[in-house]
Image (cartoon, rainbow, N blue to C red; front, side, top):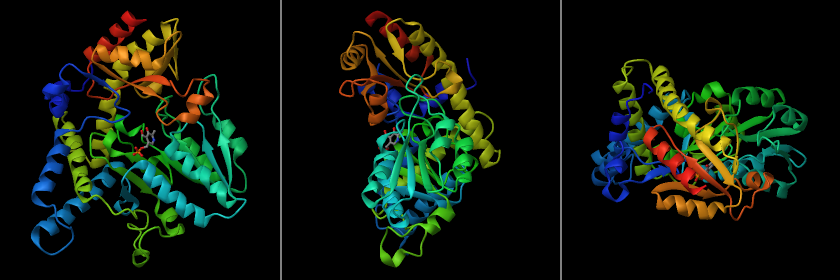
Length: 409
Ligand SMILES: Cc1ncc(COP(=O)(O)O)c(C=O)c1O
């Protein structure tokens, strides 16, 4: 149905051969994806062969450091950014927290920061707390009818004191793909920094981050088939302007300034596994010898095309059902396959349990997009049902989901 070799893809994920998971259709990928075998192998190998303090002269230590450096360089190349602009922290929430502490020192009382009510809390709360130091935080609100952010509403909020705008590439509930390039240009014209959360977008194909124009771009590798780690791109110029958050004697090292927690060496090395997987996909589909940016772009297109083809029937079924309230758009090319909805007369929690009886692993709740779910007038204690999938999902699994919903409703 699409050009993606799904048998090959699924063979790269041990979860599909794991007896205890047999028959489960995983529809909570926006929460966390399965890990590819390459990442599992790297983690395993690191723990067996190089689990010592890295960057010393003795062989396993030297190798450990080289593996960590390679992971950073390879991921940076795949994202089209400089490896000195890429940082690994424990999670996206931790990464934005650290940058917020730096901004707290940089900004002055009366400076303004804009946040949205469409974002996951990781890209809202940390900036909101800057108010304690006299920084004015303005909220760019969604249109409650469509759940979308409108650029014209942002324009009305931007002003001479705006220093930063935090927004999402793709909400983990609404799932429409925001026009990041257009928005970063608007933000830069106002003289502010664009702080973009790519966490819900990246599992569907890692983007050309340089082309997006963001000053900060964060995402979580545990949703991109890899280890529990946060990746953070920070533009060199922003890095130079913000004060050091690490040890004082490392203040001159731009690659250490924003990772005070100390990295998890093994998980950083394991990022090589994610890249090995992407490279294997490129080779399998006949474009392994293209330049890295072409490989990255073509892998992303393969993933997106497959997902889009599977997504449309689900969106059609949900938007046609009289009891279902679908959050976000009903045209698959305009959104990620993260499909949130509520059903009249049913608690989301109850339906999630019923779906689990059909071996369908669907998420439920507000997914830390608490402000968004509230703005949509949905009970935050119950939340929405969220069926999220990625490129390794099969047509048969989506069919099973539609069939089960049909029976339950
Ligand atoms: C859109 C989005 N942003 C940020 C986060 C936070 O990521 P982390 O768990 O790495 O802190 C999540 C996690 O679910 C998310 O979905």
